[in-house]
Image (cartoon, rainbow, N blue to C red; front, side, top):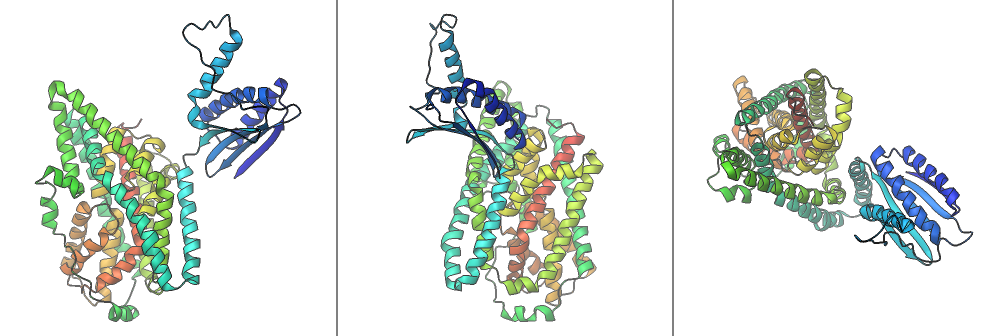
Amino acid sequence: MKEFTVRVSPEQGNLTNAIEFIENRLTECKTGVKDRSKAVLLAEECLVELFKVTKENRPVIIRVKRFLGKTTITFMSESRNEVKAGTVNFNSDFDYYESAPNAEAAIRNMIINANSDIIRQSYRNGTNKIVITAGISSQKNLINVLFSMLLAVILCSFMRIALSGNICNAINEYVFMTIKTIFLNALKAVIAPLIFFSIAASVSSITDLSELGKIGVRVMGFYAMTTFVATIVAFTAYNIINPGTFNELSYMISATQQVGEQETVSILDTIIGIVPDNFVGAFVDSATLQLIFLGILVGGVVPLMGEKTEKITFFISAANDVFLRVASTITKCLPIAVFAFIGSMVMTMDFHLIKTLLSLFFCILLGMIVMLVFYLTIVFIMTGSNPFDFFKNAVPAWLNAFALSSSSAAMPFTMDTCDKKLNISPKLYSFSIPLGATINMDGFVVVLTISTLFLAKVFGVELSGGEIVSLIVTIVLLSFGAPGIPGVSTICMSVLLMQFHVPMEALAIFIGIDAITDPLNTANNVFGDIVGTFCVGKRNGMMK
């Protein structure tokens, strides 16, 4: 936090000094040039009005403050009456030349009124107070999220130590789980239309359909390449660390209970399920692949509609903007949701289980780190960009994905990063990010590959060379069809356990693993989406 304060006598000669103080302090607070210029202009107009009403021999207090990414300028003074900034009006009959003082006041108040969204004004107990929001850092949301995560870890760790298990479970169920469910339900309500209209708007904006084919092939080709690399990285990391033995986890196996019947996912059903038999059903079920298919289908047909094309394109684009705004509004509650997510995790984890599975965790972590290095290397090789600058710009989306544990829920943040931080064309990222949230799941591949090998080893199941090839193919296909929502790894793991005859008891162990690795998994998935979008955009001239 930075805070600077000065007291200025309300004399016209001191106005220049006050403005100079404000401008210098805003520079120290690293306020952007555009925001700084606007804030200085507003500050000057507000000070002129404030000087008029301040009591004699009373100073005007000026405070410039930066806290959690937000910079404000505050003016306070004991006054004879309330500041009347923003109240002078004029009409078409107003003569500026004959009424120069009034014209100046009118223009001043026009400036203040035009920026009323960043000015707050109050008058209480004989004191005028004006607050100008000089700038909000692009990192503000990230700072708030990190603060919420840290606060959740500290408070919930203390509660877990100080309170009984029943009270902790009650807090988790009635507070944290309620907040988590409400937040995710709100996001899920807009994810389906957001995916559809985002894809449809992107595709419909491409008048040359051959261009769509080129973009799609390049994006999917990149995603397929990184998925293949992820399988190699997973096997390599597993063989290096070689986590777990049967004896080490034998007490866990005897203690686990048979997991109830799980929903199974057939590979053939995944392929067939891309094409829906009901247009509305795809939205009701939030079937991501079906929504992408429908978005491409509808968007591809729009350019062929002749004179109706412009109206339909406008409608689709407007609908896309509406759902993006709704999603953005919902995600303003992200710090609260993150507190609930992390708090729930801290309150419910079995720390003995975590300690026992540390070797597996570090194995998966190694795989994630190697993939991160691979991504940054690809950025440098394919685009020539500085990988450290790229990582700095992409890390807010990475951390948001980590906190949400959902590629779909993080999609608005990912798109915002592509747009504002990386300057990628909306035509590309509005197509590649929703697509990547479904088919590009490199972290998912790393977690499932290492966990399957680990659990097979723990339960004494030996995998032949042919079964390992089958494992790779199955995991890759599952990654293409897995929805980007929390907990999908558990369903997919049940498919793998049955396919390779590993007892379903192992699923109870995997749930403990997944609770720790799911945030890393999701963050890796989203980072891969951003890298693919950036590389394709750079190499194909699709940057802003």
